[in-house]
Amino acid sequence: MALGVESIADLLSTVDTINLNRRFRVVELTRQAIRGTLAGSGVAVLGLAFKPGSDDVRDSLSLHVCGLLSQEGEEVTVHDPVAMENAARLRSDMRYADSVWGLQRS
Image (tube, rainbow, N blue to C red; front, side, top):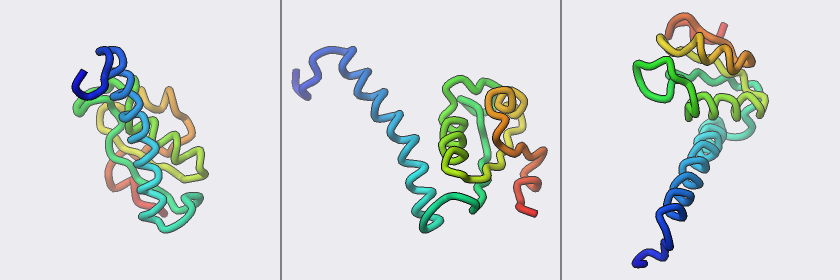
């Protein structure tokens, strides 16, 4: 084939790998923005659902990235007006803010 893709399955596998690696790239960009290690710096995240306006957190990019940040020792505070309840069932290791204003560190 023109691009070296031998089948649709190979193409979809490649796309899936690229998309998964984007999640790790977000963590790396966060680390660079903070200039060093993530532990203890505190990160606020808006949006947890798989798609806006939904409470569906299955395969949520945001929730996965929050988990990666948390694994690195980061204090992650999140807000999503619709999906927080479902997210909290999956990830109890994050702080859930009732509003955007609750994302501020005390």
